[in-house]
Length: 314
Image 1 (cartoon, rainbow, N blue to C red):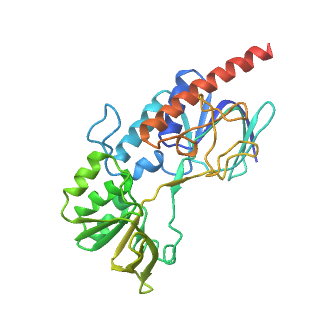
Image 2 (image 1 turned 180 degrees about the vertical axis):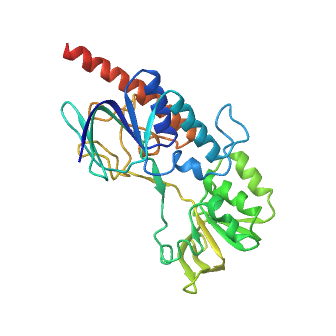
């Protein structure tokens, strides 16, 4: 085990929020280290197309993630592919512990762990994961060419993935628990004009069925009519939102009832020197541009915090 000192800012998470924070920290001449155990870019790295990031047209999520990484590294950001297993707060320094046992102490910490796909929690979901159940159509859609598929959800992601599947699958049923979709109007218009997609409203999934090898159908309950039934399908794609990856949030940091970290306008938590950005933070909308904005704000907030800390030490 080695103990490392000297970093002014440590960032945990390499999605758009974390990478933007790293870029801004480097531009502020702060000695910064970013930890990311997986693929830099977070959720956007597995997104097929990104159409709403200002100034960037015709780009995939993976390409945008690569550009963000290279941009941050061009300013000298140190990105370490290591897993963080614990974070502890301190009076003067905060501590980050890695899976390999190494410990890093830092003045300011930016939490950018992101979120994970929310689960339905119905029978068959876990059993058939990878055998018909998926949380990423752009990742797994290829395997359902010419097959029947079901998409569950009503937001932007669900509609985008349903449209993507309509180019591959034989048919797509979009099932939403409410009467009205939450997706943006432009996406809804595209969906309504796609003949291979049918929309089933006011309906919840009660079970995902299979033959012990692969998915064969879903059971549903229509909350408006009270009817129940089954829809034959070979693929179930679930897009009902994300839960924050808050397992590493240290004790003492305030979170809301859903587990999102509560911050002020500087993205700073109630613990001085600890900031939260991106999908792990409580806010109105989870979008790439919002995550990037969080990262820039937290980095500027961290720089201000360090200036005040240094002034107080004099």
